[in-house]
Length: 135
View (cartoon, rainbow, N blue to C red):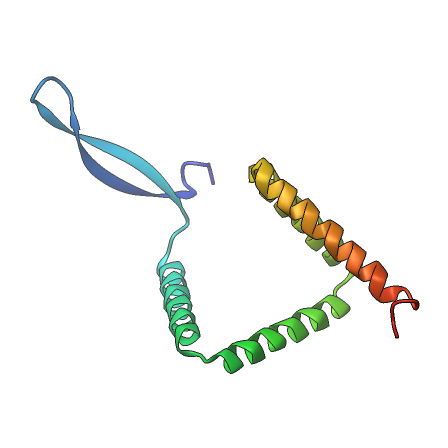
């Protein structure tokens, strides 16, 4: 199978101004990779699921929210305990990339705030660990 055969094509016709007040229709060929009915149904189900979850979150009380977040934390902790070395490396690499992207976009003011917050939390952790302060 050649590269051309692996595409399904969707023709979109858009109006484009060609000369002065003349309008001419231009066909734009947009390749769509292997789209079938199952993909469309799966996409629609995902969209409905996302909307259902958004609506449920809007209706939930603060107590329900805290319970949901606690369950999420426990599920995450359990999945991390069961992950393989390769899965862990992949997850950490994705985290590093996400953090680098976020830091690349932050302003100087945001950077100063983040560093100050880190400094304070490290200081608080040292104080907490030091037996002199625990009375």
